[in-house]
Each structure stands twice: as structure tokens, then as C-alpha cells.
Image (tube, rainbow, N blue to C red):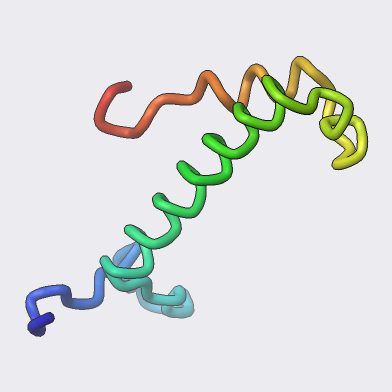
Length: 75
């Protein structure tokens, strides 16, 4: 890839305020993909092995809420 994926600051720098950690666009995309994959796996687990939901410490309502989340561009 090229250098067009520059670092993005989360907040403006203000006097007396420390600079927050910077996140790259690649990192944000990787995080989004990881969360989307988790929701996909969670949905599959709820359908095929619902007893495993209890094993990971989630309730059915929590699973339904997580699965129902839309990608940011569909909100």
C-alpha cells in the first residue's frame, strides 16, 4: 500500500491538554472488520449451538442486541 493512509487525530490539540493517542486508518478498518466478524460468529453460534452463549457469559438479549447492530454507514 502507499502512504495515503495517514495518521488521523481523534481530537484537536489544546494548550494544557495532552495529545491523545493517534489511530491509523488501517487500524480503524481492522477494528471494524474484527467487530463485524465477531457479530457474524456470534450469530452463527446462537443459531447452531445456543448453549455456548451461556458459556461465554452472555445473555440471549445481549446476543440479540449485538447481532442487530448495523455497520456505521447504514445507521
